[in-house]
Length: 407
Ligand code: PMP
Image 1 (cartoon, rainbow, N blue to C red):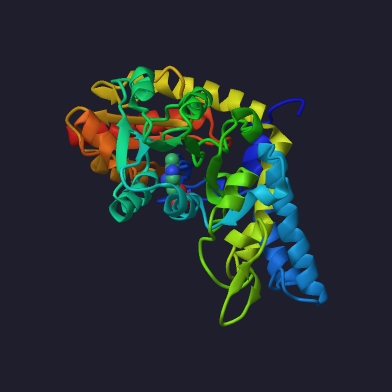
Image 2 (cartoon, rainbow, N blue to C red):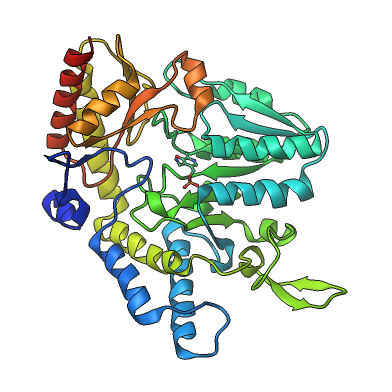
């Protein structure tokens, strides 16, 4: 791309033209879900208008073109994250589904009583609870990497958590509540030296940072379509082929079998072994357009633009009296979390909503992070490629107004 054209990018997202409460929408809740460009919306309409049919089973024309389109997405994802094989790409319902799949399948087969799983202090609940469920079932134990007051993981403490019982590390690439970018490449090397496999939760990274799974040497990586300008109800689990092959299936049903008799069933090959039942076909097919959209701008351009915007937002917000940032790591992307002395995050959020500004307030599905900082919740503004400095100015003015009303 010759030049980053923000006007053109904004024009690609029809919802950005709408008003909320009589004011132009300022959408800063991208960590929860991103808006969709016309190309993705059009592809959903196109799917139902011209292609709708079940995949991987019909001999007829529509089923064949739907199947082909679904498999095009798989190959597009493979290229996007540089996986070695397309069969290493499992189409899931989303990040949560991918983590549960690994906790269930890898966990049941390879994690036993007394074993240990390392997670970090800044995980989303979806990267805590599935491991707790596994530990309840298996009698294994979770160990937690602590973080400092800036919201950075303590890497010395991380190294010291390993012992011969450590089987798996599950860590987020980017914190959804703090914006911290974790040094996952180093973390993976350390884990591998201790013989542990690593799952990286890339839900908040895939739309902001270039990811090369082979370079990272990550064992499992999960993300959601809806946070990367794509449809809801679809996500990706990347897994190394040998690990996926060694794991038992997730759910039983259609598509994941080779042969079924009442005596015995044999399972399908990768990736279908982990894709039981009819998938979210339309979302799977249309995720392709979302990746094309990101590629058309270029992740390196997105990274640079969002970095600049995050710095601008941080500087402007810092001017508000009583502002306290939660999460001030050296390496951050997209997310600014804060509290303001004398106000409750929810009250500020409600006033911002009246001004057409969408932010998230609360614990952001990361209650242990809030406990670590001794607060019930934060106000979170999270940026995407279509946000602007003008919108940041509107946010800052809105917060100032809310503070004046509340204090
Ligand atoms: N992990 C992180 C870091 C997230 O931000 C989210 C979504 N907020 C999830 C996991 C869960 O994603 P989903 O709800 O799409 O499954």
